[in-house]
Image 1 (cartoon, one colour):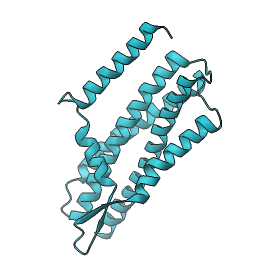
Image 2 (cartoon, rainbow, N blue to C red):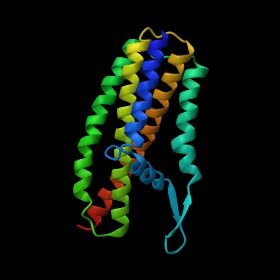
Image 3 (cartoon, rainbow, N blue to C red):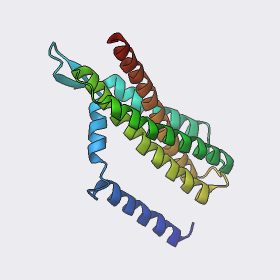
Length: 193
C-alpha cells in the first residue's frame, strides 16, 4: 500500500472512533457498559452482590481469542476474496435477523416479574451488542475484500483475518447465550399459562 492509502485508513479509523465513542448521538459506551454487566453473576441470599464471572470471561473472550489466533497464526489461515464475500453475505443475513428479533424482545419487556425483566434486558443488550459486532465484521470484511482480496498470507491480511474471526467467534458465543435466554423466557411464559 502507498503512504496515502495508509493515511486514508488511519483517518477512517480516527473518524470511526470519534463517531462511536465521542459523538453523543452514536456513542456506544452505554451499550458496552450494559453488556459488561451481563458477565457478572449474583451471589448472596438477596442476589444483590455481584461478582465478575471468570467462566464467562474465559468463554466469551479467551476462547474466541484462542480459536481465532489458532486458525490464523497456527494454520496460516487468511480469507480469500471468495470466502470473504460468502462470509459477508452470511453476516449480513444474520445482522438482519438479529435486528428483527429486537422488536420481538422489546415487546416482551413489558413483564412485571423482576428476574424475567432482568433476563429480557440482558438478552436485549446482548442482541444489540451482537448487531454492532456484526456490523463491525461487515465493515472489516468489506475492507478486507477491497484491500487484501488476493488472499496473500502477509502480516496485515492475517491481522485483519484474526480480528474478523475474533469478532465472529465472540458473536457466536453471544448468540448461544441469547438462544439459552430465549428458552428460559419461553419456559417461564409457558409455566404461567
